[in-house]
Length: 67
Image 1 (cartoon, rainbow, N blue to C red):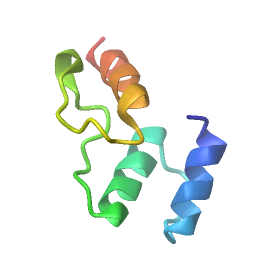
Image 2: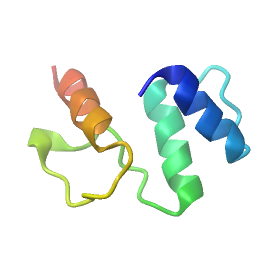
Image 3: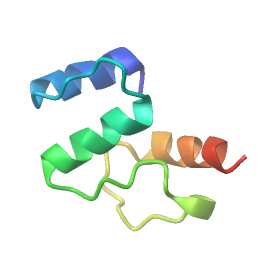
């Protein structure tokens, strides 16, 4: 998902978006939704949150973070 889309979602939750990374914003949105704030922590592509909106981006971000 593109950053502009993420910022729009964050703003809908009343989250300030300035100076936050994608990981920080998504985790803030996850918390606001009442979910685990686990974005980019899916080590080895393992995650039990199958209905998560961020799932594919999460795997990509976790891979980048591991390298």
